[in-house]
Image 1 (cartoon, rainbow, N blue to C red):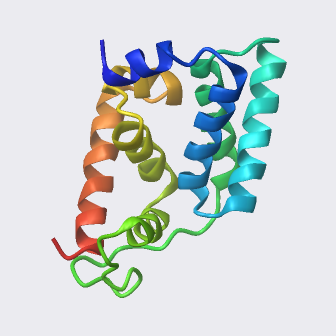
Image 2 (image 1 turned 60 degrees about the horizontal axis):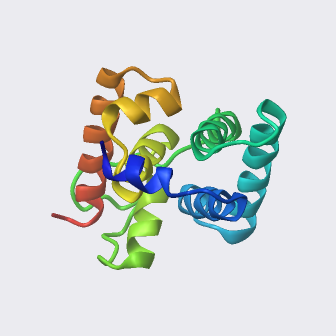
Length: 152
C-alpha cells in the first residue's frame, strides 16, 4: 500500500477532500483565484458523478478538469540548461512553484500527483487515464525539465 493510499484512506470528511483538491489545484495553477476556480469545477464534477464523492473521485475530476482547461494553451518550452524562460529559479517554495508552471500541463499534473501526494504509477494511471508507461515517461520528462530550471 502506498503512502497516498494510507493518506487517502484517512480522508474521511468532505472538508479534508476539499482541502486536498484545493492544495493540488493551487500547485497546478500557481495562483489562488485560478486554483479556487479549478477546485470548485472539479468538486462540482465529482458531486455530479457521485452524490458523496470520495477522494479518488475528486482527484480524477480534478485531473479531467485541469486537462480540459489547459488543452491548447501555450506552454513555455525549455531550451536545456540555463533556460532563459525559467531564469534558473531559486530552490525554494516560490521558485519550485514558478518552475512547475514552466512545465507542460501533463508533466505538471503527473509530478504533483507523484511528488506532492506520493501516488504510485498505477494510481496515477488510474486517476489520469494514462497508461503506466506514459506516466513513467511523463514523470521522467518533467523531472528533467525541473532539473534544468534549477541548473542541477
